[in-house]
Image 1 (spheres, helix red, strand yellow):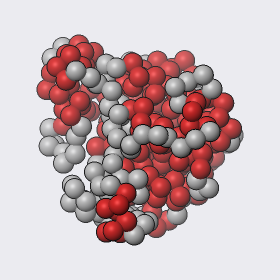
Image 2 (cartoon, rainbow, N blue to C red; image 1 turned 180 degrees about the vertical axis):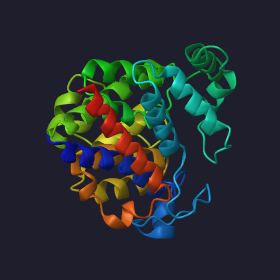
Image 3 (cartoon, one colour; image 1 turned 45 degrees about the vertical axis):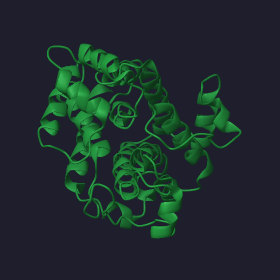
Length: 295
């Protein structure tokens, strides 16, 4: 695959996260019935919602994705501290939207991120949220070797989410992303990767769960949408119209859909609506440069 194809896919992935986030942010916490009554079927990035977003404004899903990317770019060999610094820098901007598990871990962190995540897990009685899955895509975009992707996917997840289901989901997600970057077909990859996992049931039936922030529920809906949808627009629209944790489901699904179709396959009206396009473009160029340096 030539450099332009890789650039197209990486840009598609980063923009896919942001578009799914911005579109789904309008309907987060709403039920399917409430969405239908208010919007019919939401297809446009209009902002509003629980966070009173500007049209094209993104939430924690995209911002934490960029934190992971920035940390890796700063220190690709050992990115933990750099990612942590980016997390805290973002946290101190007092963002509108931040998940409870992540907020608790940020407040608990002293010398060790892993210890802070464990303390949060004990204090809250669980840590199986989708907050590490929503931000992990840059790992698959930055590294060219699977062993590095697997290691850093697990590490960045464990920084805030002690529950091993979160870490396993990040590795599986980035395994799919890794194969899509190599040019493989979306549905073939998902069908092959889910065999023998707790997500295998969605290959034959719709998820029998709500679209909640529980990582397993989130990922089931993401995978189901990716298997059913015919193009990028359908992926992010299906996610947005699920309600529940729709911005996160949209971001996670949108990232993989964006890699698969490439930036050139994303409708311009969606890409141009995103308010932080310059920052996304800069990250994309730097990720492509990092990959070139690793090869």
